Length: 359
Image 1 (tube, rainbow, N blue to C red):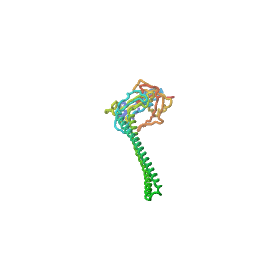
Image 2 (cartoon, one colour):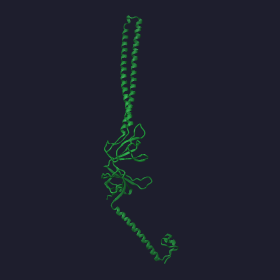
Image 3 (spheres, one colour):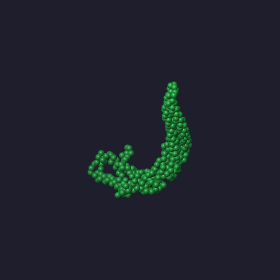
Image 4 (cartoon, one colour):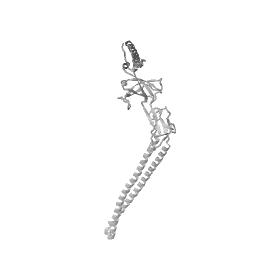
């Protein structure tokens, strides 16, 4: 028989068995109590083993569960057009219905073009005016050039006449001879002056015409810009696909845009995606990265439609595992291409993916 002080076993052990003060036990009683403790430990171990076995049996199907989001392989975000040379919101005139299927070139949305068409007409009017000014100036310069040529020819004729008069020197008096020499000198100077003047007039007219041409070209740029602005307000589909309207800020709340809304240029208007090719983008933990190999298959369950499931095959994965800032758990980002096309498969739907482990 032995005596075991409470200080040896601890107050918690004594309280657990309803003992107060000094704990006095016989060897047999101590052994029985120890046996009870061992039985409790064995029962707990058995429960843990059963749970572990259940987990192992659940994993014996060779699958890895991952969560992800449905993504379209081919998609584009359509923005509210940006207009050159203008600020402020644009008024939405028409908009394609949510879920509508469109082909390349079909109208997605139109915006009020009244102001842009007015500016286009004004720009075209100014351009036409510059064209007329250039034509008038060319005709005026041609007339002036012909007149200058005629004046130069007349001056040349006067010079030749004066030179002929100088040949009469022997039969004329000295005064007449001196007078004829002065006329010849004046005629020559007049011809030289006209030649210099004609050259200066030609340069001045070329510069004047060039100024008008530059003004016309600048106005042509304005016309082109206004045409481009007017075309931008007619938003057409760049690819074939399905329309998914985006939420915009309207009336102090988020919702789909409607006709008559004032929309800010550059804000998202809708998404256009091809529903025939869809992926599931999943995040797979680093320890399970070995399942991301070419040829891997998976079963996809949509959270929004629990009764539906689809098959998918491995498409691509990130080469290295990454983690958000401040989180030590790393994961791979992978894409699985869905084998079926279904109306339930829409972008941004959450999904659970069971990736089959290849042996």
